[in-house]
Length: 280
Image 1 (cartoon, rainbow, N blue to C red):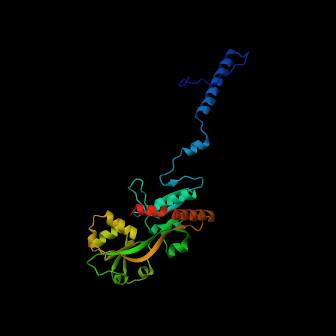
Image 2 (tube, helix red, strand yellow):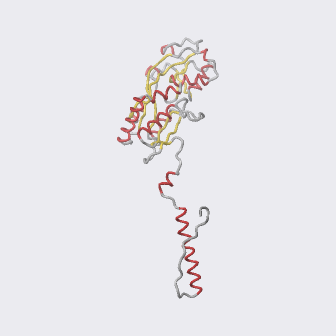
Image 3 (cartoon, helix red, strand yellow):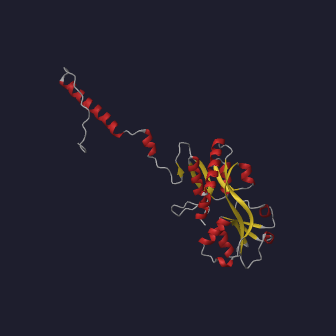
């Protein structure tokens, strides 16, 4: 009957044994029966045990070891406090992993750490701004999305183009390559900021003359900030660039090709564009 304990299998006693031997054999048989019965009740197939292991929130399950992908830890590319909205680059990479049927483990760090992740072997892939350092260091897998580098200044300043940045203090992200007209012009004084949120705050307090960042980041920073945006000029464009998926030179050709095909499929289907619009 359901719910009633099931007795362990019985063991037949051999005839002719002395009483104490029959008693010992009975106890041994009972123990063996209980042991094998407990095994039948508690053992699970190996597959079921493995399936019961819950993956992390940013892991796509696959048979292969997870690829370690390092992303820029700045909003809106990475978000930490919005349930269901991990950030632009997290969503795109998770979609690419599903498309390619590859396991991934996503993490984020300040921008300057991206190249270091490839150099020290702690990351297999990074999503970084196209530039000479990453081009020399890694395999170029596929473009992720296009953006513009823009400069923000206050209306009280005379900064309306790159030439007017000479002699000025410009807030820049540490490790970022913007354009030769910015990076190689020593007359433009650079101050490293952690993110555009810090840059906008410093600009509002007149501690910087201007801030340069991507249009996505500056737009998000201005929307999230309580600072009055009417005090700033409309940003002017310095260059158009792409965020690119870069792979360690040790990553297999097969894996790179699968990721390239996945990114192309996401682009053609319009999924990347839909993710970008959802954060604007």
